[in-house]
Length: 90
Image (cartoon, rainbow, N blue to C red; front, side, top):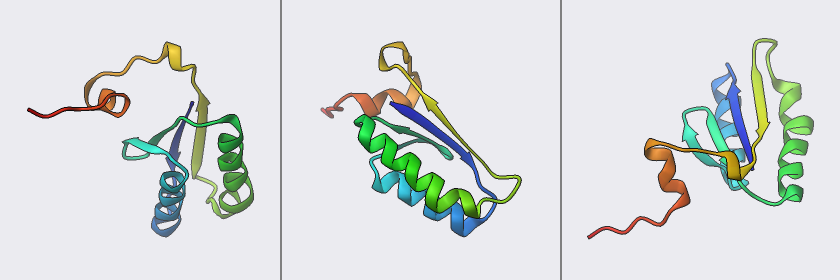
């Protein structure tokens, strides 16, 4: 799993970046924080998209942080825990 956090100043680029993450299976945890839990090849493809398509358009003040996370060491609280479980309503 990886966590992607970003701060992109251009509204249009930020929206396209967000949609690209969602299109590639990312789940929004917070406004600019996504969790991606897929195969290593899939995660590599996302990194290549960022490197080849998006990073060239970033302003000097923009940032994207990708954090590799071991699923066994993740603890979630609040709304974030619902992404990992089926919710049944009575």
